[in-house]
Image 1 (tube, rainbow, N blue to C red):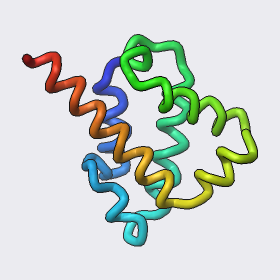
Image 2: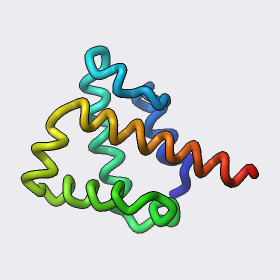
Image 3: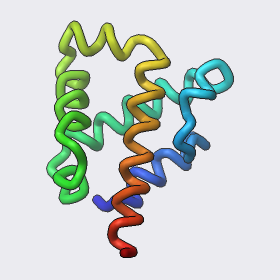
Image 4: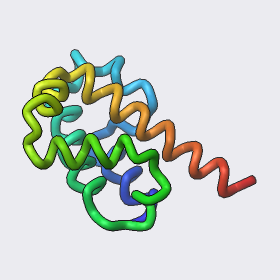
Length: 100
């Protein structure tokens, strides 16, 4: 999977922007579903995932593994939105770094 796979997931939910947290009232279901789909991809052994900060992978693994503390934390839409916002920003940095 490449970075484009993640970007396509964000586009699928029409949340292809770094200020996702501004849409928590307008698109809560989309944010919840996007977060879960992104976590499912983050736990896979893919080259793109090795380029991401380990905190993304660790949190995704704990969430998928039903860690109580992590799941309570991510039960709040704001926390999911900020996680997604940080991820999409980091993906943009990967893109910019490759162009340089």
